[in-house]
Length: 110
Length: 333
Image 1 (cartoon, chains in turn brown, orange):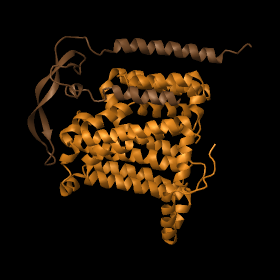
Image 2: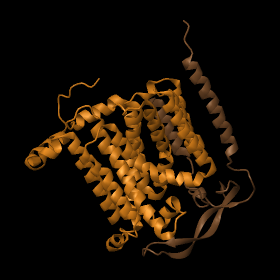
Image 3: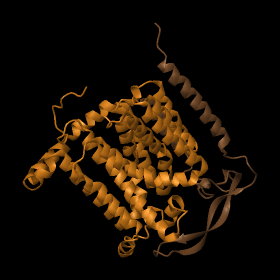
Image 4: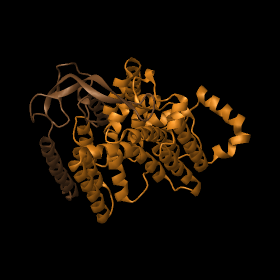
């Protein structure tokens, strides 16, 4: 159990579900030219992009201003995250689950 | 086994002296656990609300860095270790795999798979298991069809789950309803825009030292909302996140303890050591210091790093809730 928490802590620290997917988030901590994934799942490259952002520093309503940021620009189609590999993993997991559940219900003959 | 503590920590001595000084005034509030928990809850909620009005950006920036890891430890302690779920066989361990996968970028539908072994391993009637699995299936279908909206909803609503967990621990008095009632009232106040004049008055729209801005939080927690309502959602998130920490770090431990009287800090430490073992506590402490230290160097990056570390815990809370729902009982602590 302790080992599990240890592994979980460090594995999660290295990467994690993109709770907040956007083209800027996928280039966080990366340099221009680094590989990235666009929010719609295409392979891309981090590049300087101009984004219009709301500025709330004077309250509501915000003012809008263009800001230069590093964002993910698509370079090729369909090579990034898609659900299908995870779907396979999920189905395999359910199969293992059924096997373990049925095994644990089987009477032991000793 | 927890052995008797022959010596007292200095901080216990300080607390005893403070308690004695205020006993004539506050003794009745402090001595009775149900009453103590309610006023602690009200105090925590009020402080969270005040900080949301005065320094929301600092609250959002520093809260996860200082309290994030300790609250994850509390999650593990009260949801898994103390109910001894980890001793229930291989099915429970299988529930850990989707949580682990969350750390590797798995979509929400995969993370939700942790509910299935939790429901299967629960000792409860078939109809409750069927209900638990139906809930899992419904959530999964929603996550598959509308993943981003599901994640945003989960991000905002999971803060409230802690309130539910605290509520479920013990039977509650009518007086205890004050805590959720005040949380709901304050959240409604924030969502209706009541906080905005206060933010202007306190100059809280900016916090350059926090290395973040409302624009950042709007884009990460409420990009789907109009600019005005998005800010209100950010404020309610800041408030409810703070309440979430208070629940796991103050109220749940207070109620989960066998002994109704306050426990000396030294004894609390020994109980923690009993639950996790010293090596794990050292790891948790190191992780807490690492993230706090990272925050000193780069606050924004440290916050993102912590959020990456913590993403699994919402699903852990859901899986444990599913298990105790099927068993139809309060979590044993």
